[in-house]
Length: 259
Length: 327
Ligand SMILES: Cc1cc2nc3c(=O)[nH]c(=O)nc-3n(C[C@H](O)[C@H](O)[C@H](O)COP(=O)(O)OP(=O)(O)OC[C@H]3O[C@@H](n4cnc5c(N)ncnc54)[C@H](O)[C@@H]3O)c2cc1C
Image (tube, rainbow over all chains, first blue to last red; front, side, top):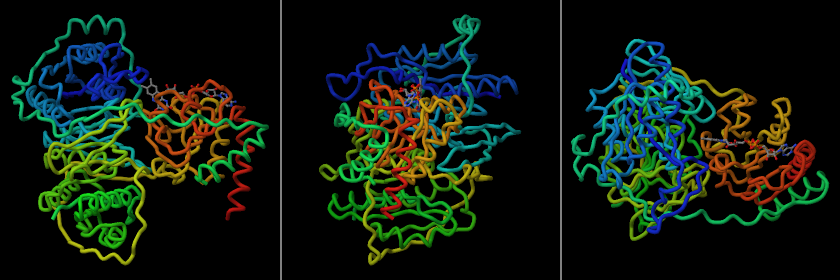
């Protein structure tokens, strides 16, 4: 069983965001970069499948030099090898450009029995790459998985929807994206961290993936990035609990007009 | 003639509210583009019956894929159907609700049609005949204004943010019956409703959420009682989901649901950035917390500094009385 996991390095959600002078992105410095939490679920699931059924787990990440730290994290958890997609040409790529590069990389390593991703990359939160990837690779997809059971050439996947869960049966190979609830990701052991240092990371640029500038031309661009509008200062409600309760209801009705 | 295609999600023969919001927004965008046509797409067994309602909310044309084999959502089939309409109509824009289904479907359609896709938009504007979208990024710590370089301009819309049009039952709609190949490599084999058929968080107008300040699962009924009094959905912080007091499907935040109700009442929740990421676009936020420095008060409109165990029962009582009097 060959499993490819797509991994994105993202700012830690605690990180303070500073907007760049161009006003269309964030300042990269001083940001604490981590593996997107949903991708950790994907890596964990891949490792569990490997432990149960045998096989190999290959990580793929697109990003600048620092993305190697994310790949090392995944290798330390137990993945076997990694591919790092790195090219200045990727800087302006949108979700489609990223998906094209990932799809090309997956094809380049001979495809997989299963492609796992997080259901969204924290920060941008587009939730697009799994579906774009499945579409570009012409594979079936099941997104937001909270349970995956592998059978012979197929998988049974439980997926969360509004007020219910769906059970899907998909042929393999397929792209499956991970939602919280799928598993509890492990921490890398010291032994794992040491072993990761010796594992190979294969670096590929756009040309190696067979991608030209036109393939990466963004279909969408961020024109500007702004801080959110300030919310009005909180109005504290005084008095004993009973008075507070009545006063809150009055304000919700008369002032906020939400009840 | 320019047109806007909108995907109307239906389940069990009913249009979901986010679909009606998307049709309403499509109408506004079409009008702002100087009278473009709104073409809705509805897919599923029995969906033909929904065309008239889509018309009432602003659709000029409704493309209906109504066949017995379309009983369950299947990504590949739905993408094929929507792609068929997009290929023929060549719309200026495609609007899809950012629901579990829309989230799954939109990228697949984007991959097939080569459309640029902007996810989870919280506002759309028309500038010089083109769309411009606004969306939250970095846990709501920033907002991006995004533009498309070509057409169709495809966007998914956050639920509960775009207002519903006032339905006009005198509006006539043209219905186009269509067919699609229903073959799919991934299929739904069962749908299991969440316990109790509880109100769906992402579509609720009011949400009452509880956090670690509730001290233990045995006290969580205080949150449920308050929610019941308001007719609200119940939410939770991750701390108590991870502690196993409540199920993950009610978690609000970065790794849970993103919600935008009219009213969000946070009880014993500190307001960590990852929680705020899921609820800071709520219209009115109320915080009940015993710590005056809790960050939740920075985003709250109304704050009650106090012991949730004393305040919540009183608020439940007062709310019951208020709604009973209101009738
Ligand atoms: C990658 C990542 C993703 C995350 N995703 C999410 C997410 O999706 N959603 C989420 O919620 N969190 C998320 N978190 C966790 C988040 O950082 C916080 O740990 C969590 O939100 C805290 O939950 P809480 O407010 O219930 O608990 P606490 O932070 O412990 O706050 C409890 C609050 O209750 C108050 N309190 C205590 N007793 C009383 C009382 N008697 N009356 C009134 N108030 C009282 C306290 O003053 C305190 O403010 C994430 C964290 C990480 C690292």
